[in-house]
Amino acid sequence: MKKWLTGVLSFSMISMALAGCGSSEQPKDNAAGGAAKGEPQKLVISTWGFSEDFFRKEVYEPFEKEHNVKIVLEIGNNAERLNKIRQGSSDVDLIYLSDYYAQQGIESGAFEKIDRSRIPNLNEIYDIAKAPLGEDYGPAYTIGQFGIAYNPNVIKTEIKSWKDLWSPEVAGKLTLPNITSTTGPMILDAASQVAGSKEFNEDQAFAKMKEANKGVVKYYDKTSEYVNMFSQEEIAAGPIMEMYFKDIQAAVPEAKFVTPEEGGYAVMNTVNIVKGSKNKELAEDFINWQLSKDVQEKTAKAKVDSPVNTGVKLTDEEAKGVTYGEETINKLHKLDMKFVNEHTKAWIDRWNREITQ
Image (cartoon, rainbow, N blue to C red; front, side, top):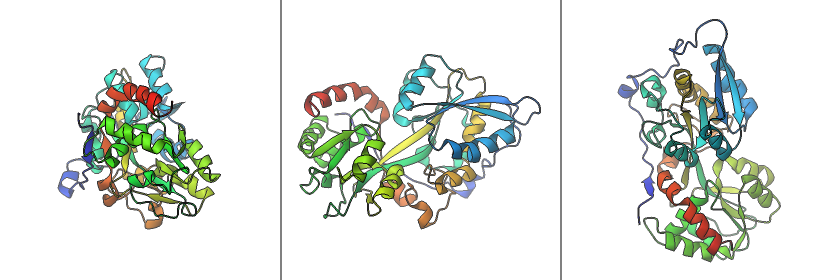
């Protein structure tokens, strides 16, 4: 069986000598004419739309002012936005996608190759974020963590490991992501680990999922479903992305989020330039802006996105609910998204036959 887990993520801080090779400051002038006077250029960005007011004020407007740009947003989920640019039915310049969907975009030729020499802030981010899908394509501007949340008022045994989701204590109080969700392949890999396989083994993973099935209240498709079930105590445990834990804790203050002792999974959101963009250099300037210490710090402190810029320093309070720090990053696992995309259809078919029939 082909190995699809690239292993525990490596983390290395960029040395001062390396950082000196390229300034992390955003240039005042750029080849795209951002500093030119007159009618502003239009930069079309395709994104999810969450925290839109924050991004407008703290990220977009300062960039617009400095570069004489008007940013226009196209909002939607990963699948619909990717399909739109594949069909050539939009004038999008830059697109934000999870790594799962970005890999599909690469395979369909939807993205331009970036010029890394024009993005000096790439020298300031975690190595794993620099080229998650290859050197020709965009970086991850944030890395989230897929771990476990649980209610200690209901689950009396402390949850420490992925294998604890298979314990009798959790049965009947558990939710797991559907295979069609972004994190579905991650729980399938976790099941393979729990079954004792060091490398992904599909048969063992599905056998282990069958064991868990009888204790699952519901396989969730949307995070809002998870939060609602947890708030109403229909469930008391299940894996979720850390960035949504604040919503759970708002309803159940005693709730806990756990990085499993085997390691959580990296959930990486990427930014890429759309094939045929007439504003490629301006789009590269924006990527550089997105990776800057100032922008990364603002988004982290607002608990909007976890930072990838290694210069961002957070207090313990500021880091709550944020995937942050060398120890945390070192434990994260990253799936090989090319392998995932090659096998997704077969996994969905098998899941429907064996798990949710």
